[in-house]
Structure formats: C-alpha cells, structure tokens
Image (cartoon, rainbow, N blue to C red; front, top):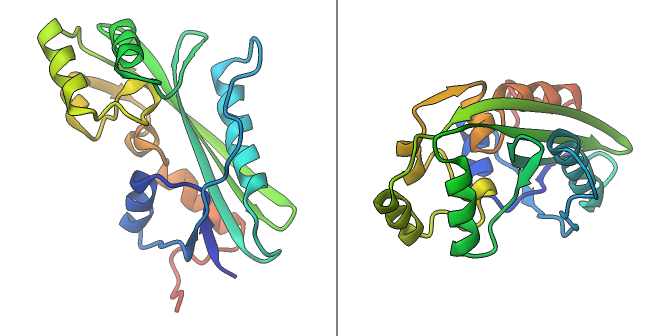
Length: 192
C-alpha cells in the first residue's frame, strides 16, 4: 500500500508533513474543473474532489488523496483567476465582506471512496487601492481560489475566520486524518 497525493499543491504537502504524512507519489489529475450550469459552490467542490480521486491512476491497494478548495461569495464560485484583472475583480468583490471557503477531500482505495467537506467563514477587510495593487504585484494570487491565500501576504487582509484554518489553506487536517484512517492508512503508527 502506498499513499498517492492527487495534487500538485505544495501547501497540501506541507499540511500533510505537519502530521508526519508523506505521500510516496504525487500525481495531479488532469480534469475539467469548470462548474456545471447553475451548480452551487459546495456540490461543485465535492464533485471536483471526487472526480480528481477517480481520475488518479493507482493500484487497487493504493490510497489516493485528493482535495478541492473553492471560494464562494453567496452562490458565486470564485475559482483561480485567469489574470491580474480577474484577481482584482475577485478581491474587490470580497473586500469588506464575509465569504465561505469550502474544501472537499476525497480518499480512494480500490473502488471505495471516503469523502468529507469543510466549510469555513472568512471576513476580508475593506481593501484600499494601495493594498490591492501592492498585493497584485506580489503575484501571490496566481493559482489561488478567490485570488488569495490566507497563509501568504493576503493573511493581513483577514481579521476573522470561523472554521478550519487548514481547510482554508487547502486541506482540513483533522478531517483528512479521519478519511485516511477509514481507508486503512496508518496515520499514527510506524509506517516504515
């Protein structure tokens, strides 16, 4: 049995490392992540995590871990911005408001999939033009749902959260441990 992380995210690798879990292989799946017509953020996030887990090629006894993080402003899904202009649009829409960050996790072993999602509420302070432009210049928004990452420079814009900090970063650690254990992965035992 080996653990395969179906994600190229360095943040997810770091969060797993915090609990002493290191994937033996990293295989980011190539799937279409476009939302379906009228799809709501939470079902969208759950579907994408599941499809990622199903798309990773693995042996029957391997454990595949995949996740998806979505920023939701009401019913609107704020994905990864295409460019700085879209990142600015996302950040201005989040500025001074609360939004939700949803991270869905899917763990697959053989034909069985264990799933869990975590929804956290996040408040972003009202951004000045100077703050917005300085942040955009860092390029930290690239590849980040909603155009920001709480663990980076944008953490200065987040005065309040309710929920899972690690879920907002991209992998809710407590829930992920439960899924890995359900799949038979020895999280707290000697893995040598």
